Amino acid sequence: MASVYEQVYRHSQDDPAGFWAQAAEPLYWHRRWDTVRDDRRPPFHRWFAGGEINTCYNCIDRHIDRGRGRQLALIYDSPVTGTVRRFTFEELRDEVARVAGALAAQGVTAGDRVVIYMPMVPEAVIGMLACARIGAVHSVVFGGFAPKELATRIDDARPRLILSASCGIEAGRVIPYKPLLDAAIDLASHKPERTIILQRPQAEAPLVAGRDLDWRETCDEAAPADCVPVAATDPLYILYTSGTTGIPKGVVRDNGGHAVALHWSMEHVYGVGAGEVYWAASDIGWVVGHSYIVYAPLLRGATTVLYEGKPVGTPDPGAFWRVIEQHGVSVLFTAPTAFRAIKKEDPDGAFMKRHDLSRFRTLFLAGERCDPDTLHWARERLGVPVIDHWWQTETGWAIAANCVGLGTLPVKPGSPTRAVPGYDVRILDDEGKEMPRGQIGSIVIKLPMPPGCLPTLWHNDAGYEESYLSRYPGCYLTGDAGYMDDDGYLYIMSRVDDIINVAGHRLSTGAMEEALAFHPDVAECAVVGVADDLKGEVPVGFVVTKAGVARGADEIVPELVERVRASIGPVAAFKQAAIVARLPKTRSGKILRGTVKKIADGQPYTTPATIDDPAILDEMAEALRGLGYPKGAA
View 1: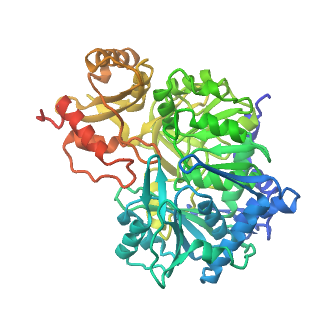
View 2 (view 1 turned 90 degrees about the horizontal axis):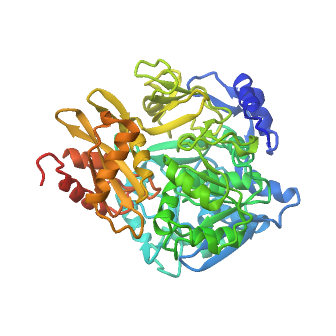
View 3 (view 1 turned 180 degrees about the horizontal axis):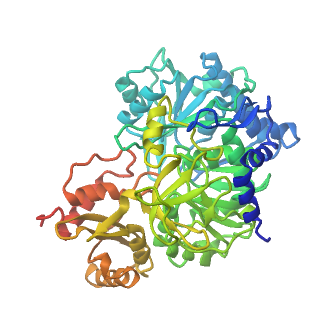
């Protein structure tokens, strides 16, 4: 298929109103919009002002009304419980309508907030769609978050009701949720009127009389609720992301622009058609789960997979391939971290060869920078296109991608390709001037941003402007650093904070990580800049070796140093690295480079609430002491 990317991209820039009006046509509007983009109050641009829509209707009922009610809508696959459940669009509608009716019976109406604190079970997806059905605003909090973090979000969103479960299940362990929820409610100033608790047999929870309701008793017999039209500019959900002050920022997503952008992206970015099986291997607590487990596939009329498991360990590195074969997955979207974990445990792809992947067509990677070595490994073993793409919680969908549905452009490993239609991406220096091609700067998006992106923060317009718009007036600051090559391909090298200054030279830790990742013994790696009296900052590397590697640091580290020297030059001053058993990450797979830097510099730090395992920071501190950090440590 010849690419029509240039033509489509130019249309989106020259006539954004016409472009997005056309994209909105396949959806059902209870009332057509008055204005495609309302620019009366910049920088708070609003899409499809005057229109009325219901996101749940467009995800479910619209397909039933068009004769596709018996098509599979949702497949729940849980290797940790040995369960597979399937829902047609009709069955999903009936479940959603009953839960929506139960919410309504508890007094929840359009505009009320509902916090969802649940594991990866169908009821979590059903709860999100039930909120959308009656116009309530959901705020999903990653299951297992500590009480203090959950309480902070409760106080900001001020929910009328909380949906939760008795427990979550990880590989080999059960995590009781109810004690965490009870503690969070005790800590919170705002007290929700009710909670509805899904009792899981692995760990049932005691209920608080007068406050807690049993999910099955409350929802199964509830009168089903119909879809409630809401303004296109009304909020669909709030999703909290980390703030620099330690106070989470409530990213708002509207109903109209969100539905239009995600529906458009499924066809044109991911190349997925109605009726195909699409799998985003993420968690509903993250933006990927919101956008591409729940809303986008269902808006498109595709079948979506909800997976309660891991890429390795549930039960082995062949877990993903089993799911793809068993359910006929055409397109998979996951994080590079997942593939690095698989590569570490199964470097030769032996588990992959045990499964029939003939229906599998495309792999998409996002969530962090995809090193070229991981991309090459996946492409060579899968034999399908591997598409790196880049986006953020705040945007809700891809900023840069190789848009499969527009005809694939040539792949350049290390680049998420070019800006997606609708986005005007620029690279700026500290003074706000555009950087020459090939030179690293701050990546920004020229305002107004396309539909689907955050219109503001929850009840915090000032915080939205301060966090994202004040640094470069007229532009949204992504917080990422990178460059654009002569062909317009973007390279996302690191967060702005991960650009280090070595003796006056601005260098990207991402470029150094890329060099380390190509070492044949390295499964994954991270580079951080630490304080140095002479050079200002110097880079320090951390690598996890592949399974079966017996060589030690005395052999591997000199080779790593030489690779960085050959790739970037002596100016990088890369001389130190440690081999570690694992890297500190958030539950979504992002490496906590900033925290490691604080440990190395001897600065106080707070253990991030999103960390996968807090004990790993002690391991990193020990590795740093072995390298002499903080200065003077033995």
